[in-house]
Image 1 (cartoon, rainbow, N blue to C red):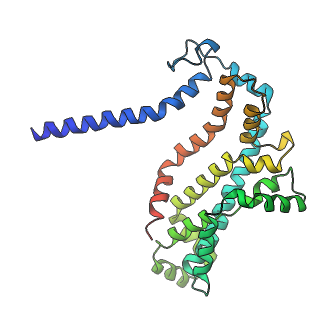
Image 2 (cartoon, rainbow, N blue to C red):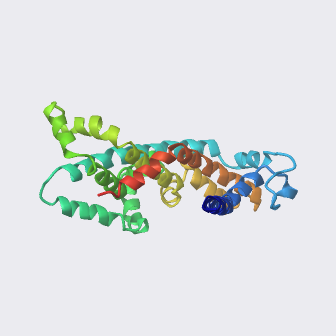
Image 3 (cartoon, rainbow, N blue to C red):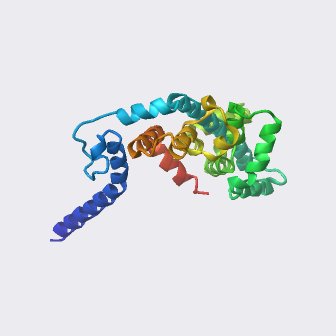
Length: 275
């Protein structure tokens, strides 16, 4: 009897979880299906089209240089993710493993930078980029995002979980501090590296405000910037399916990256809060 009650409760949990998952997934599935439906079926709740058409994607590609925007976004987001991992791990390693005067004060400043709204530094940063002559260049898109407080914080927290005995043993073997970081800490910190890389990549990929401020040339625009101008600027002609197609093009690369690194991403977030 108790076994039957347990099975019934488990089945009820699965049903509720399935319903919850579908309620979150259905809008995304509907958006994907609407981009390949004929015009008279776009607003139907049935996600299965009578026949598949790619005319909305074709129309979008005729209006904006989406492939160039995709290339720019990949270059900018990849460079920012790589630099956030490298520079964040270097600073995090120093704050986690070195004892020096003012270490806690510096860490406090790092934490403080995480609560400063990006809009607050927008104008000073724009003036600096203008003085340096970096407008309409990759420098303007990449360099301001190369290091951030969150990546430093996450690496510091993760590095604190690595036993000190391991570091002492590596020093006895003759490894330098950089050797310890790259040959001992990096292999043990794969979840943190992937988490920082993923969050930095997604943050840069979805950023629209900063590219709009510093980029004017079409060939230098990122994909979210192009799609925002495409949807708001009237190039889509008010056609919902074309707007959904452009949104799908922007979302799919990030979604695939998340699905590929999901296990490490969750592990990195969970273990960074141990200390």
